[in-house]
Amino acid sequence: MIKEVNTPKLKNPIFIAVWPGMGEVAYRCALFLREVMGFKMFAKLEAGHFFKPAAVTVEKGVVSLPSVPAGFFYYVKGKKFPDIILFLGEAQPPLEHAEEFSEAIVDFVKKYKAKFILTFAAKPEPIDHKIEPAVWIVATHKEVFKDFENIKLKVLKEGQISGLNGIILGVGKRKRMKGACLLGEIPFYTVQIENPKATTNILRVVNKFLKCNLNLSPLIERSKFIEEEIEKLINYLKGEEEPPSGNSPLSEEDIAKIKNDLAAYTKLPQSAREKIEKSFQDAQRDITDANKLKAELDRWNVYKEYEDRFLDLFKRKDTKEETQ
Image 1: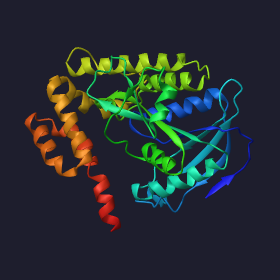
Image 2: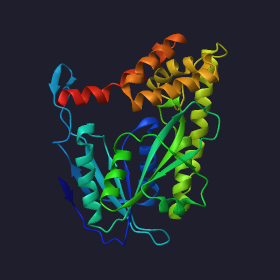
Image 3: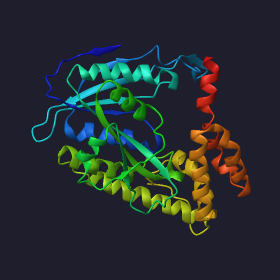
């Protein structure tokens, strides 16, 4: 399943594992690290039996099976920072395969004496896009927090980290590895688009933790562009100006994705937004609370704006039922 094209000699490497997710936060972190730190690919994870096609692609009237997502292992040998193995997955497998998938990856990196796993994720919050988002942390063991004690972080006391960015930490802990997940706050109305501000703040933590002297100025500049475009969209929804176009860093698809969520945000009072977000969290933990969430959305007449997020709550439940 994992094919090595090289066998680097590494000394107790830090292992960073990343998959696509909300706000592209984790994935953009990995892409930035790979680009600026000189990582080299040394192995490929081919996981065809984990990914079953749910549809065929059609091009000019001709159908074909979609390509199977893969994952790639990269390494970099540090002089002033630890050796690092970076895993970049193209897609997350169905949740019923997540544990087995994670075990294969953890077993592989343990061959290289990796003892610490680091993952990234987004944390949707009812916050404004102009504020400086916080970075949260969860860890496999209490002593891990000492490694980050000189970095300003919030500890996530309770909740969930969905998907592989969380599950691989649990698998690693079971296999006697330590680790942590860094979660960057993003406004809930931007979950479907790139969020370089959250990415930047997570990488600031990585910079201090690994002492790797990253130059984050390109991400900081892009954060400003994205923030300006979101502000234009809000003003457009208020009827104050035309929608962004031309050289906008957001694509037409990006703009379409967030218009509905922005519309809900600009017409809801803060207290209502917070209550709705709390209801989403409750429904994620217990799907029977979805009825209360639906009632709250209907109360404020914003169900259409939240419809995609609401229906996503049932995807995991439907997947389990299909496999039974």
